[in-house]
Image (cartoon, rainbow, N blue to C red; front, side):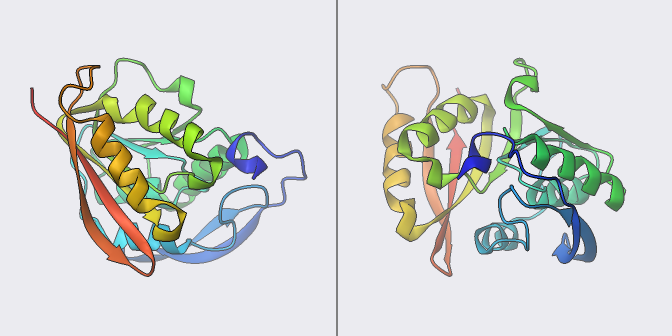
Length: 206
């Protein structure tokens, strides 16, 4: 669990794995002390199978790990700027290294506070850190989803037995009209596969 909250203290031992990203077979580097260091985890695979090329502008991968989602977004639209955000600096270092290895120039792997506050996102793809608990997860949603530009969507993959349906209900309640905060959105389930749900949170036009 430590990797969800901070950079691990153990030795940074890189290793190379072969994975499929954006229709290519590529070699990437990973290391212990991050999320899913040995492979592209199943939830991320489910999400990426459902996605097409993202729009231009600023994109967000929230909880980037070693970078499979951010690298895919950036590869599918080289004209976009992809912000790969994590609190684990080892994950960020690996994402930067993998972007360089793959020749991807448009990824910015940064800590949360390093994303400029005036940036709005034209799309968000995320396998959010469900295991941090509801309070922390909800805080993340309230921090980042209001930064969608009007009409933009966030796509979240969540394991059904770890609370996908309860998160769906909470998002609907939190961003429903009349809740305050000036951000309204509606939530739909766009896919269900291998025990995972893909939720789309669509920010409404003003």
